Image (cartoon, rainbow, N blue to C red; front, side, top):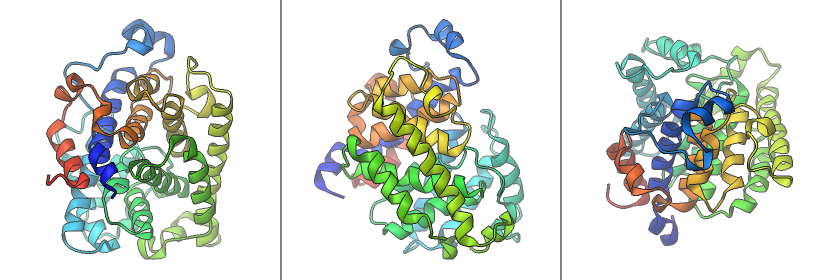
Length: 343
């Protein structure tokens, strides 16, 4: 990680940003735009709730972060070294009394199945689900320093497949982690969609068998390559919609009208990116735009906050918002660890 990136504390900015977006979108999820405006006032003036409670998006992000930290502390990242602690953290989240923030059904069903240590994790994976529950939590994979590209891709895909085994959920998780990584490393926002499109095209024929095992067989595809192509092609398709929206930007319109409501993985990625890229120099405005959306507003804003925070660093977020953020200390501890601050 370059000194410039370390100096702006990209990992801390991303970890705080995702939780800020999540907390800002929590009260607006399941609401249409008129209802949000009636509840919150003008969207450009939306205020973070006090206290700023988060949803399962941030809870599961922290579960993944803990599992990743354990795996990396044990040595080079491998599938078995990662799967064990992440699986345990997901199951702990499933049983937590704080797991009462409208969690997604896919995560609940898969985690109940993961709570049988002798069962291969592939038997728990919900291969028919491409809900956004896997890529809403994947940002830590893009922030851990020192991973090789194949390790980052494998880790992003495996953490998804533990619950969401649909190839689009897997590809969108990989693409989301890659976007966070690129921004944390200093990529310019204007270059981001082209970089993501190139990455998706490169990965289109790659099935990471070492990380995913025989998962593709459980989805009834003709082969592993046809399995992964389904996911990458859907992600490439939504990047087309994102580029079209950015070519004729309407900053006052509901972003879900352009790139989707975000309940599914590829649309959550695209709409979160859209909100960030509409306001690349205004991180607070970006998460407010995401929270004032008619779809899965907490997940969209969670992703927009991760992208904006990775790009701008911790200084993106008002001190007053950070002070009242639920899980603030743990989020910033992970940020400090991955920023090299000795956390």
